[in-house]
Length: 418
Image (tube, rainbow, N blue to C red; front, side, top):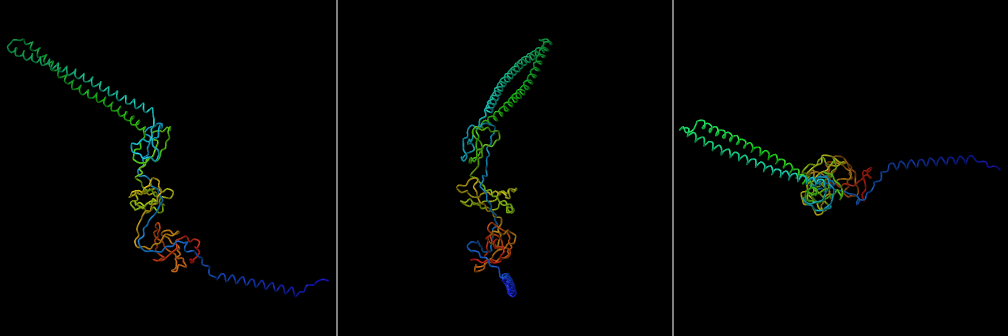
């Protein structure tokens, strides 16, 4: 037998399927409409895990802060005055030194021989000067003796002439003899005058010769002193009172003239060098107050210099310290510095939020009185400082706001606090 399907049953099954489909479509459409009209769920945040602050009115310090280090105000780079070989290192880094403390001993045989030669040349020139003085003095004495002899002969001839002149008046001597006596006296007088002129010229010549020799001695002595100074500087000294911070040579090393051998710093005169972000450094001026935190104490100071260049996005600011350094302070010690730029009187301010730049607008979550909900408000910010920022519009005195990072709740206008 063959089963023959009934047409009425197939039709009823088709109708049921259509009804089921229409019903499901209506249910889904209604659910979507209902969900779309529900309010978004309010996110919740744990109150003890966020940072809040209350808006205040009053004076606000405008400050910037930077990490830095203590550096010496006085640094002495010790260099080699002349080339040589390092024979001995006397002091090690960290040692207390004074201006005449020997740090390193160098050797330079050639320089030492040149110093000896310069000393011998100088002393030989001195001996030559003494010999020249004796020779010139003997010449001068001989000339003085000649002048004395001529004076004696002239006086004798003059006396004879005068005596014969008296005899000639009485006719006791011939006229020719009187003329001869007169001529002899006159010849000796002229010779004496010439010799005296030669003596004066000789004295000037003697002085000139002695001056020339003395100049030569002075030149040789200057060369000797230079060589001796260079030889003395083979014993390299610190130059200042302080601490030997660095030695850059080893025993046996050959160094050239002008090479850096060591660095000495005055550890009692330190200053702070702060690295300030270039965007925050524009209002810094020389003389502004600074607080330097060494982690042991806070030292007051003032800005003494601002580096005109920017290095890797920061500006170096030098701070002169106005108080005694704490124990343990030493060069290269890390410090924090806070510079007071200005003091704003009678302004609204609040703690500086994680996100929010000066002279801009930012969204803050303001807590209600019961601290159960926080609602987003738009706030206009003004001048910022290290820990605070000025409020120009959007908040009032006594408002409590969230300063923590609320980026995760950025799409909500209201959050629940628990």
